[in-house]
Image 1 (cartoon, rainbow, N blue to C red):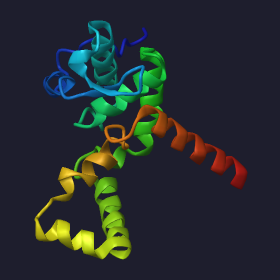
Image 2: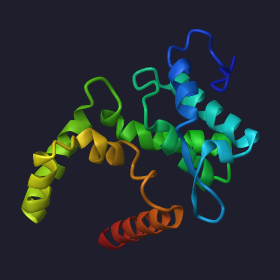
Image 3: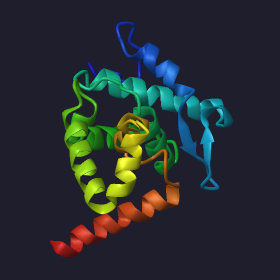
Amino acid sequence: AKINLFCKAENNNDLKQIYKDINRTFIINESDDVTTIDQIDDEKINKLKNVLIAFSNYNSEIGYTQGMNNIIGFLLKVTKFDEKKAFDLAVLILDKIKGYFIKDFPLLKANLIKFNNEFIRRNNKLYNHFKEHEIPDELWISKWLQTLFTINFSFNEINRRSEERRVGKECRS
């Protein structure tokens, strides 16, 4: 029998957090403006919930953590709100970067160290300003990394940069 990942499993421990974070989700609308979920129609909100629950059911090692709602929201936008395609993309992407989401966030921590080293090298004055004012990484860079920058750049900008990286990789091959 085929398992329906889109069902709302009663024993899914992530449901409470998913429902809480739905209202914190930002999705880029058709005019490339970032809008809050309350400005999106109910059908799209339900699709977002469905894909988040499906991914949480599918990958119990990762489950659901904050930030995924914005990544899935972006994937839904890219796929014209096709739940199956967004889910498949989420599986491909999130499996490769699961260290951003699993216990103790090993990939996130490693990339924060790399980022801070580069930040010091490129703009030590600004780095020191952030540290002087006790601006924690979690307030800005962790969130950027964990949401794959989907909450900070426009849909067109993310698409353009993704295309540049893809073309660049093809040229190097």
